[in-house]
Length: 190
Length: 190
DNA sequence: TGAATTTCTTGAAGCAGTTCAAGTTTTTTA
DNA sequence: TAAAAAACTTGAACTGCTTCAAGAAATTCA
Image (cartoon, rainbow over all chains, first blue to last red):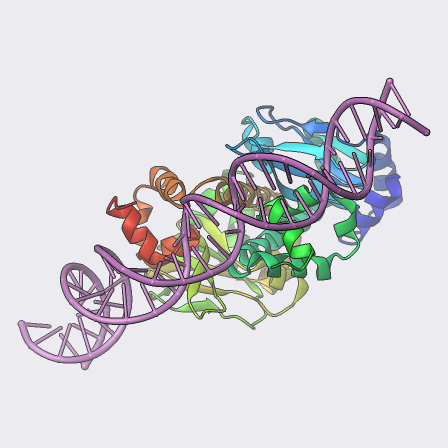
């Protein structure tokens, strides 16, 4: 529901009741079935998505024709293609639900007018995106320094529940190794 | 000089002359010699750095004891460890100049008070960090889908001048392969 | 529920890139 | 400008992970 986003926002800034009303009037929650696309490669991305329930992912189709997941978004995460969003260029990515989801889709026009009415929201989005960028930096560190098996174990320790929620090939590609290799890691045959 | 930052800011927002004065009064440019550290692993990062001249990089020392560059920052780029900055946790990274630099160091306290005096700056930093995050996503895409040689050629095409500015082992590690392999790519022995 | 589809497992062969070591070239510094 | 230090090159041996293929298990959906 809407309160999930409101709570998330209020972790970083404080809104008064008038601002909450404005926000509530402009935002709507939609249910999205598993495996539906929110964005496809080639489209210009003009929407930010906030997951209140379920899980979405950003992926590409690599030259060999297989999908590789670049990012997951679970409850209380924003997901979008910021480069396409800001530059109005065709996206390199797909964004797709992994489970049945409840999602707040915030279009550029709506967001821009909200940012004018409630300038404090600039701060919220600044902090959220700076933290996301920080997380992306750590991700690159892990990809660079750990072996496949270490990356799997590290992820499993950090997000024990999440491992169950996605198929093996999605997680394997996110950790940058093959689904077959993941099967071998799991069975201890490495 | 200060105008480099001012121009960068005014690409995204418009400041009036009073705001420019405030900004100018709180910001100072410093010269930093080549190979000096702005941040070391284990320190809490409470400063953002804007490069007006020269080049800096963020790197780690991997388990084998060799340096791996995660990010470069040239003219008009911000560099910091956002995770350490926001969570007040010890950094996993080093930040070091690669050339003699002119840098604007913006401390958290200063930035926070500037953001209160000039709330528009929230917007500037939001847009900059969202674009940086977008660039990080593309970087992960390239790491995932291209061979070592393709990554090198792609980088060289995108940033032909930059390739000359850093040593081979820095660029090789940034592209996630060994310095020896880069030597072989360059000589066409692959 | 049963058929179709998707996902997972396993082993064998292969290879892109690493590691090591030693020599050469370039850059830095006293 | 000479000596020291840093960066680059080259080849040989090696390896972590991929690819392929084919069967087994689990999930989806009519």
